[in-house]
Image (cartoon, rainbow, N blue to C red; front, top):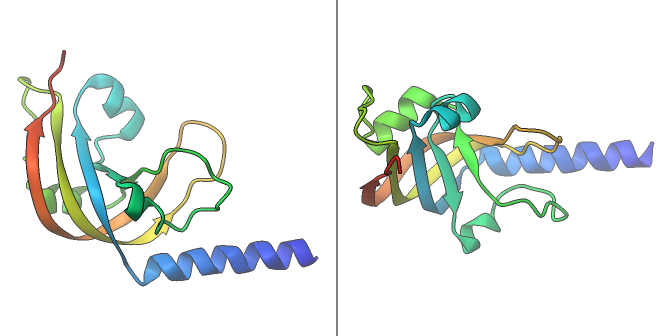
Length: 134
């Protein structure tokens, strides 16, 4: 019973932290190659830098690479300025940005899923580059 209460409190604590909004700096990617589209479904993903990764509401025992995808697909593409129509000349876009997110959900299971968050705001979007298909 004590274990269940601790788990519930940890879950509520993570959700409360995520609901207040997190400001993170790092690299974003939108990939359009077939493998990425199959795995990520056309979502924009974010890889926070080392300092920002420490802010994510994930268990301290979680040693996986800190990254997540934005669950609000249309809004995130709009906020990053990603064209709605894909081109066949590249395999996506990448850049650096500071973002504000909420509703962060850590995926703690095994398998091919990933953490998600809702993108609220993009600040300082820079160094945008095309991802080559090579």
